[in-house]
Length: 127
Image (cartoon, rainbow, N blue to C red; front, side):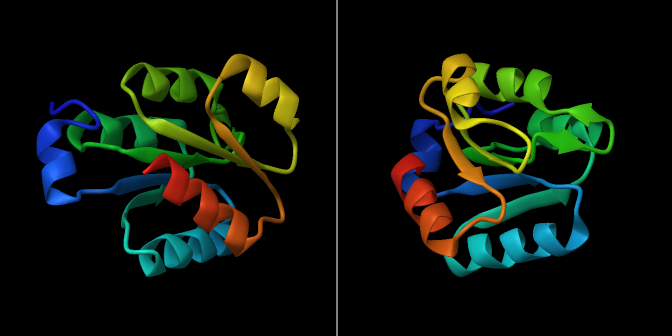
């Protein structure tokens, strides 16, 4: 597997964003926003195991993570992605920003409902 944020990715401008969201309407909205910003979307997926399969075969530059997915809380996946150098944006109505920051320094937190401007700013800063 190619490591996240490799020199080849930087040279080609590859910017793959993994979207993990179990609410279909929210997932579609996120997907359209991310595509409109010029990023490539991986997913969206509603299950942690599906996200793991994608991360095992694709280079992921950043991930937008709902905290609660169909098969559990996203934190173990977030830790795995962070260890691979993936930039994280937590997107949740259930988590607290300071708790996310304590566990994942450098991660961004975008509460639900999210604003397009905030998400745009975070993706621009991370990628």
